[in-house]
Amino acid sequence: MKPDNSIKHALITGASRGIGKAAAEVFARYGYDLTLTCHNSIRELKALADSLHATYGVSCLPLQADMGNEADVIGVFSSIHHLDVLVNNAGIAHLGLLTDMTALQWHRIMAVNLDSCFYTCRAAIPLMLKKHSGSIINVSSVWGIQGASMEVAYSASKGGMNAFTKALAKELAPSSIQVNAIACGVIDTEMNACLSEEERALLREEIPADRFGRPSEAADLIYQISQSPSYMTGQIITLDGGWY
Image (cartoon, rainbow, N blue to C red; front, side, top):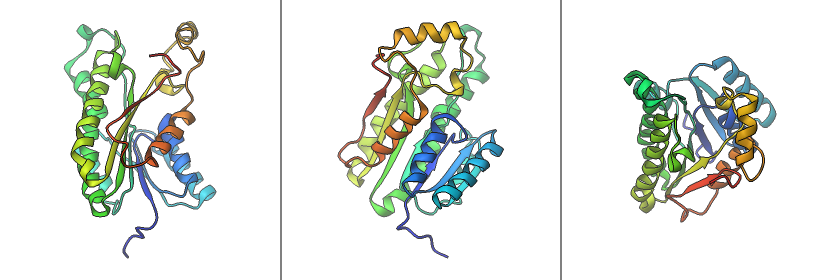
């Protein structure tokens, strides 16, 4: 049976928690069928998929996949026949001195945070070209712009994502396919769970908004970008409460 191309379809990676989970909720609310991925938390992802299907009546396919692994990404796309929105949200962090970092740790961060964008975009572009439309949104970080001490690999991966976004946007603009990124400040997710209460308080004092961002705010921005005029492309949009 051919897919119903009148129904919008979004792929959201890293969707079992945090920004990805919140984004899945927003797109489901607006009637998108979803393909959702996670690396380890498949039970949580299946529960989310069931909840979104029950609440909004959308099709929701949860898949366990390592988005930094080319074969896994090819497997994900084997079940996708048309695509309107790609949200590259899967990501990991590493806190520590660069001199203490192993090559394996470095390559793992680059694989999950940056190689994954190459794998997903390479597979998504032919699907979007069929309709001469589409939106690719990469979830980046202010550290990709500013750089962060003790987070060199993470900063480098997100800086690479920002350059990737701008370059691919130019490549795809003639085909009316948008490529944008959001550069998040401190969003209150499990990625920041390693911070002590004292560290959280000190960090909060640096942010003019006097709070961490909410995953729902990032998700709302992602959706808004996906609905923006096609002339808006190649942008790195900062969401950081006025921090940088």
